[in-house]
Amino acid sequence: MTGGKFPIESDHLDHGVLITKESARLDIGQGCVVRKGTVLAVEAFEGTDSMLRRAGEFKTDHALFVKTVKVRQDFRFDVPVFGLRTLETMREAGLHAAALEVDRVIMLDKNDVLAQARSWGISLLGFT
Image (cartoon, rainbow, N blue to C red; front, side, top):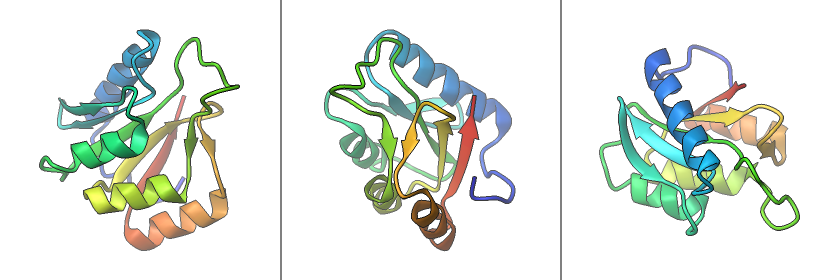
């Protein structure tokens, strides 16, 4: 989405997607942060921003935030979104890469988010 070479190796990306989708299948949460095959944080009831801040307490070079949707997601109460606030929280936590599930995670103010991500050096990738 932000263009250029994605800074996370494909096997680490695949691992993050697998962990996030399994967590969502188990109805735990919609996101996780992984780093080189290690799970740093899994989103639960506390929400995305708190999970990102918690992940930022660890070494974050090569860390990846992955966001998906729970299998039985009730969009009336919890819509999976990624916007400027999430991007800002990533930046504060020292995270520089995110993978968002295409056609499942809603990107708010997409043009502004992409422009800001580029200016902060945060890479965003869509996955299916």
